[in-house]
Length: 247
Image 1 (tube, rainbow, N blue to C red):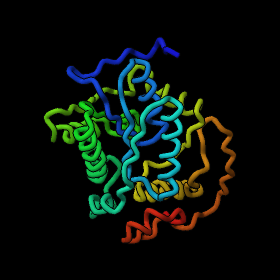
Image 2 (cartoon, rainbow, N blue to C red):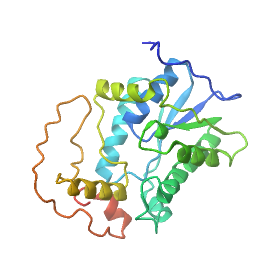
Image 3 (tube, helix red, strand yellow):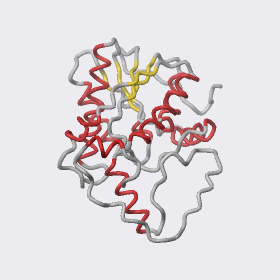
Image 4 (cartoon, rainbow, N blue to C red):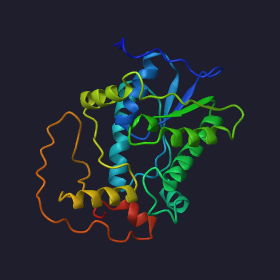
């Protein structure tokens, strides 16, 4: 159904086919529907080796696949290149949110998106990352433009998906579709820091795979000290990404 408050989108000049990097279903839902409403030809590219543990990764990916299939949109499932991700952010384990570690993470994900776009006939890339109010739009756009600049035939579309009610529609769509509601950005360091904050507030650590938009998420949080979730992270990327019992 056409939303009268949603503007008709126009691609950058000379663009005709978009590869949209998707981080998760809640963030991509509005972006997907906005492009569909404007008749834009696009596919979804899911490359997010930053999401840990693997249980969380699979839930987020499968939610995105579910929505893509419901809308008849091609979903490209890229590698879960987790070892490479840990190599890229090594030494930045304590970098703050929106800091240098996040820049490295965005660079890696956009570089892979741009490469796939270049090799498969897409002339434009964009991302759902920027719709989140927790993200730095300038940081994301800088990483996207830098990745696209590697190829003469590629453009990064810097459209602000938060505008014209986009942020509100993102939540509305998430509730309508009952998307999984993640409670941290994605990586083990984000999970660690979020659990630190929750512990300081006397709350339980994050429970993976529990919360969904639009449902009665009745989770009784016992007000008690939480076992320290900030124990040193093991050096093994495999054990770090594959366990849902830590952090």
